[in-house]
Image 1: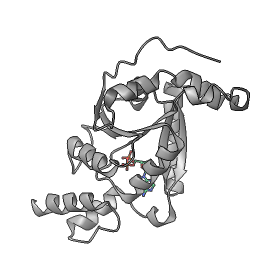
Image 2: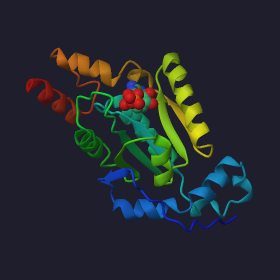
Image 3: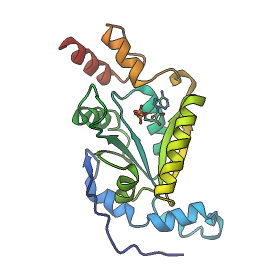
Image 4: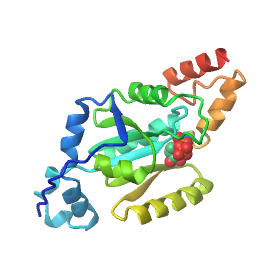
Length: 215
Ligand code: ADP
């Protein structure tokens, strides 16, 4: 099976940064997404063993990352082992008040993922399904900490699938030691002068200290 994709995605709403190899390598990797997704999701991998290495599986891991935590880092590292390309997508949400600016969150993620060559970081506005389509992602990765996470995530996954039927969501269950970690709780502890070094990467802890010291 061989499918040629003739139109390069527009990348209109997505702003890439810090990708090793740059935007161009990511673009070139997206051309084969349809073939790869067909091979994977049709269950035909066994019958097409020689086509498999030709195509790229691209996943997108969206979130607020305000700030990045060890829980996020765990999910994105595991995701990077499952897919050829993992795009971490920072949501620019004007309705939601964030502690860190989008550029600061992107910088935090770039620093934390510098050693993961198949991970890129971008920010996006608007619908995730549009950003995923523009990046050539076939899969959304999300993390699950608890049954209450599942209730919300299931709703999101269902709606995203309605908006973009070829886009599937895969959930990775949080590692036990990270289950209690959330950006919200980390911010609360840091705002009260607590030590957050066991919940977030060192540079995020430093950024939190600096942020609250300047308030
Ligand atoms: P959102 O505001 O969309 O919930 P977050 O930045 O809070 O964005 O989270 C992004 C994704 O990471 C979500 O799927 C969330 O469930 C997951 N996540 C957040 N914290 C953890 C954690 N400690 N362990 C595993 N997954 C997590």
